[in-house]
Length: 242
Image 1 (cartoon, helix red, strand yellow):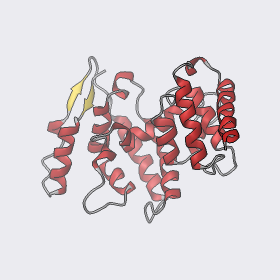
Image 2 (spheres, one colour):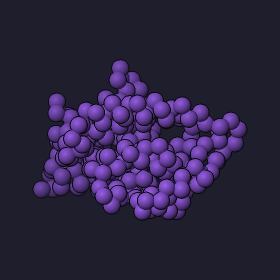
Image 3 (cartoon, one colour):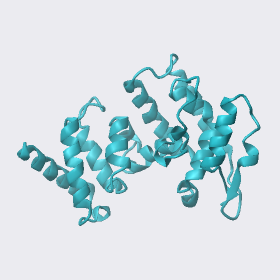
Image 4 (cartoon, helix red, strand yellow):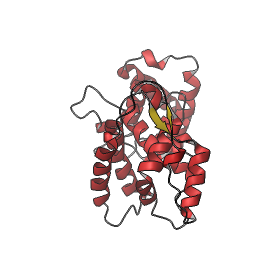
């Protein structure tokens, strides 16, 4: 599959020029990678329509953390369901930079309040892949996907943005989906899906213990129920140490 890619340096030059009032077009900076048939870009329009509808639910924009989390929970569904599942493409940071810069720049800027100086370049994946809003949305959908549930994205509604960043995206245990699901269910068991079980310092201590445990424990082979037991054991150890 051939797919479009935009490198961080080229994306940075383009955005800086745009913000200076010079729009030379991004198309000449985009390169195709991969082999075979070119990616059908019809999915972009479908995502565009869904993002427009989502933005309409926030007529005054994103004004607080609660609204930001609601927006990103829904964005996870849109991006994960919308972007075709081609492995090499999904793993290429420059694909996500292309998607954010070439097609969803208005969404990125709107998400961060349309600042006069422009949203931080990291939100386009420039300098740090995991901060790319489109990639981060896809990853939220991917990491807690529940194929056995009627709504396989229901766990995207649980948790808060900082929890995903600190305890699911960055740690060395976050790429084991069973473990990620078990952790988010453990930390957010309440009817209010954003109300945490453990306080910030407690979950940080648990996360440190889990990261150390990861060295000797192959989480990918564990069932979700077994992952839950591991998490509860480490949480119990943290509680007992206080």
